[in-house]
Length: 275
Image (tube, rainbow, N blue to C red; front, side, top):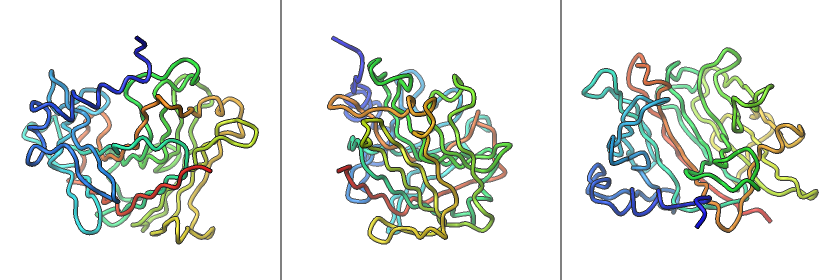
């Protein structure tokens, strides 16, 4: 039996295991948001509970995921141990595959440009197990729709993986302008007319939807890596057995303490299957 596209990490290890679900409110590892179920104790392991080593060095605490009328709030707060802050992540149960993904989010502190330099807000597809070699070098089918983080070239980035194995790196840096409290992230992942896989990244200011799409004047940045042959091969495929899921998280690189608690509220998720 092949270990490729193995979805056992999802169940029963984390979603049907009292040792894992005991960390969740009322023992429930799921919340409902945008009409779909999301998994809140993804990072639990038998050895470490909800603590995760590098690059996080923090506790991914399911109790920090607050599901309210205006969306799902992700938080970073101090832990009992000053060296291990508590962070949060939720993972979509559905494996949606090719299509257009749209996420809107609000920086609760005022602006995404003011997110603490150590904090990272991530929206990405990821598969825990490895994909078969036919998928190409992106072994976990990871597409980082957007990461809000400080770097020498901006405060956010679009990324493909494996990041470190290619020069130039498969990344497009961008700058979210000061005062931008709401952003809309869109990624269109599909197979093009020439049979090449496509992932079209874009980030807009404001609160938009598939029914009310963002206007061009609100575009912050976009990236089309399929136009570069080096990057095109890093765009993963989707098959009947692949198990990539959408992740939304707020965490700390290497557990470096922020100046204070941080929070981001994801207000909308929409998906339109590829034609």
